Image (tube, rainbow, N blue to C red):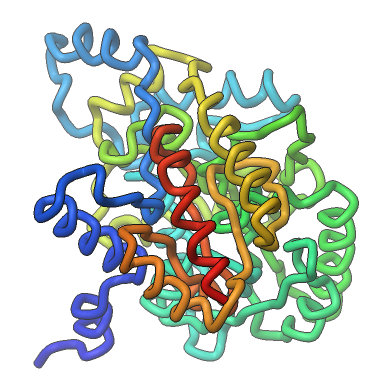
Length: 390
């Protein structure tokens, strides 16, 4: 009577959410200052002032809350495409963009549109956001994992081992959650060359699904390659959650260049997948907000400040980590025991950090640095105490 797989996903929340809810309960019991919560990637900086101004103006418009077209309001799509084409010297068309309820919906739609058989697989590059696996399996496919190298970039050799005739796509997330790593253009070009070779060998497209919720959060002038120019068969899934600090509003899009193989078929397949998943259209109010504000983003300088404090201080203490180039996470190796054991020990001091086993990286932990700098500083003595307990 009940779908057991779906029930399992409902009854066993992600470790991120489990720790987050534990932290909420602890704050209620002992107060905010008793907890240093680095679990959830919940932006701490305010939205740009233009966002609230646009909401106030739009709210009184006729039909502000009415349905839009399933693909999204045409004027919204036109403005997004115009901005992207100018910014990236691209050739997007309004016909190739579908507004969605955030990047999660974008990914779920794309996976569902691509998978047609239980034998087919989509490759996730470890470490990866754990919900990829849920979305892929709920679409009826297999989530196949490819390993990462010591520098936290993907292993091209392992990707080649994992690709077979049933591979439909590879999910690329750069800047990456949970590592903050940015994949270099050289590495991405090598991946593109491999996929071109495999497409020819298996006589069907193999897509890169570029998951880009952190596209605007890049540090130290790091170069962020524009993947659709590197690999023709790229499908981009974007969210404004992080760039505008509006994660609760659930607004994003799927976009492809017209040169993508099966372009027109995919456009219709995405609409069909959205319909099947119950996504009638993205929230209309925030579609209009996006069109109104243009290329405006939150001031994320505090994320760089937090990264620098954490990286420098934890390295001094003896923690092993790679300096992130973007997003708002720091990825550290557990200095003692398993990552789960270390996370449990940290909980005793009110320090909440996420073991990365479900990200495909046992032995590592993720620290979400999108918090107040005061919280970062308050946590440092706890990190020092933990590593000295070895």
